[in-house]
Amino acid sequence: MQLKFVSYMSSQTQVMTKQNIEDFLFKIREKNKRIAITGILLLIQGKFVQYIEGPAEEIDGIYDIIKNDKRHNNMILLDSGTLDERQFKNWSMAYKEVGDAQIKQIVGNQDLNLEGAFLENKNLEKHPVLKVLYDFIKTLSS
Image (cartoon, rainbow, N blue to C red; front, side, top):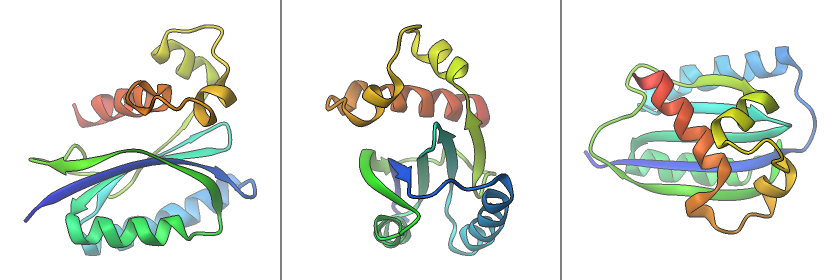
């Protein structure tokens, strides 16, 4: 079975409460278990950053659904590709709300303009969101 991953960032169309997020995560985790999808969802200043992995055909289908989801817009594909093994073997969907201080600590820039870095940075290979995302991947998967 070919494994694939996708990571993206998008803006919330309306602010979700903690209860909305918990309800959403409950549904997504159950669905992900059934279709063998694992990953992480980060909430950073009202933006979703998600990394999902699983069977290539499932990832393609889920990503198409996500692109049309009305709960977010301004979607940016951050990274995608194939995997030899999962990063989140035991996480149907990890979740973390990331504060400004954590982002600045990981990225290493105390004067980081988060809005500009997230939505205007066109050099995606060195995108600060990817650095934050992969730092949490390393933390959770180790």
